[in-house]
Image 1 (tube, rainbow, N blue to C red):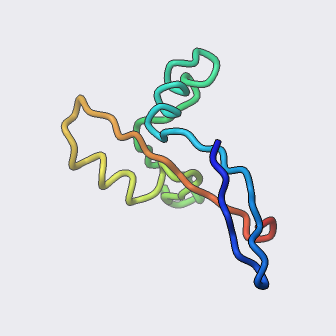
Image 2 (spheres, rainbow, N blue to C red):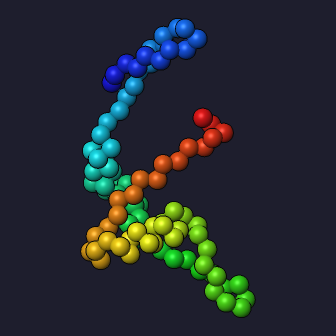
Length: 92
């Protein structure tokens, strides 16, 4: 833990700041038998039949074009380790 000082309206506010290495956190998650199995490492292309033809749709980040295109550029035996950062602006 570190302390971070943030000036606000001419007053310094001190806050505790907890952090850890992103890499160490990822390794811990991957090695956790209850969590690691839920990771998705392969891009997927999903489609559904609309009555006439199959139409591709995007449901999760690993079904989007960028994920598919990136995985197509790396060796076939490699897997991307992707961090999806998300913030709900209604709760910030």
